[in-house]
Length: 112
Length: 111
Image (tube, rainbow over all chains, first blue to last red; front, side, top):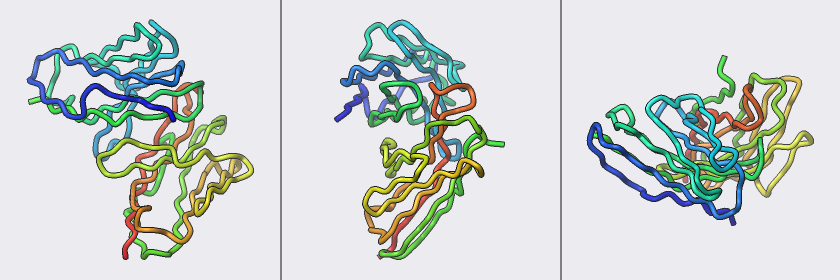
């Protein structure tokens, strides 16, 4: 079974703080993704990575950066958290392009 | 036009009923199609891939109509545990590396 884990289920941060969200997958997948999910807006892609140290912007990259130093680990960084970044953050991985993605349990981030 | 469109519902059906969802997509070059299931406050989970010839997994049947650019999901003999949001997923306009998720159709099965 594919397993994708995320570092925290719930996180509360203050405006202006730097926030790190970690994601680890154990299936040697090439591709990893970060999404946010908000009511009425569905899943939106923030960034994705197709190889170590490689990254591509998704649909809403503003205010975020990512890091992929090892194949199994993909980090999402909020450089200076703002209240409009309060959301559910979901990490996913897939073995190849266009293949099914497997999701971690999500991190519910609240920025106050 | 949205890349993937679904009827948001909610669909409320009695246990044992048959329910069907449709989803339309805008990219005629799309090659990958999936249905995901998402329970409240949980992550999306793959329900089934959708193949050109149509495919079935127990009570669930998925169909693809490339000419009309829609996919469908049929659930027969619905169970209370089928209550969830069902997401239609297609690979996007900008390339196969990205999947585009529909906003989901909410289904509630009533006893």
